[in-house]
Length: 323
Image (cartoon, rainbow, N blue to C red; front, side):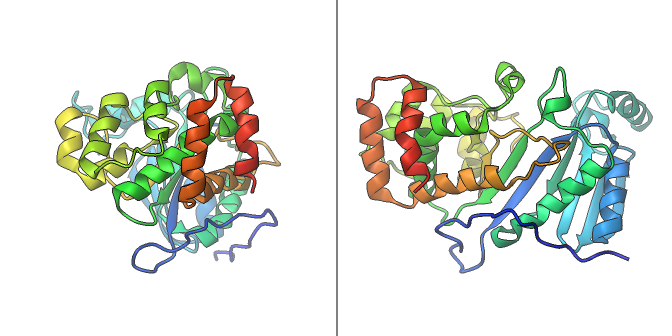
């Protein structure tokens, strides 16, 4: 029988705009990469605590549907290893499954939750506790790979100005975020969560840069035609205008959705003291600045006038981020 989920004692901050355009509590989907255990062992451990129904897609990809904390999927993080997810090379089921067993020693698993209300985010820490209990490993345990923690935060309003306000806020706080998050150097070397080009940052930081949706998308694609950003906006821009995005990126793996894809933090699953709360609370700092247009524009002007090192700018914006 499934046990009821209990909240943790770590404080999860709420964003200044908690409801979306139709008055519902905004949601956030979580992605956590880990190693040290199989997808099957992980989903069965979660099922014992949270209940629901296990669906096996293949020997290395599972879904847990209808659990008391929502739906989740767990799979080896490589599409080539899943026979049901056809690739251009047309991997056969038996070959893909066999390769999956071999790759399970070096390819991480990825847990993806369905969107959950932001005021229930604390429940995800219980998922991490269960994974830790069956031997799941995180970034600090890997020699050649760094595991990520991603937040897919629903936009409070689906328009260009809201999306741009968040992006402005993020790039202005980025030096502080990177200092606090301190992502593993491997992720930087592999380009998994690269910062935006400085020229683009300076363009969008300008207080008078509030373009139309069409220009916003075109400017973004010209400067950053890649998923490998610390704040990946391609899923959101694809949701806004799929044809415009696909015209430039016809083969990029993009699923359009009305969310910001924040992918800077590391996943440190095996660390007994690790919670996603501090990482989430730093994202809330981005949301707070994005919601304050006057402060956002003032900080943009200050950034354009600043000539010091990024670590010095981090000290400047720390007061803004922590208010």
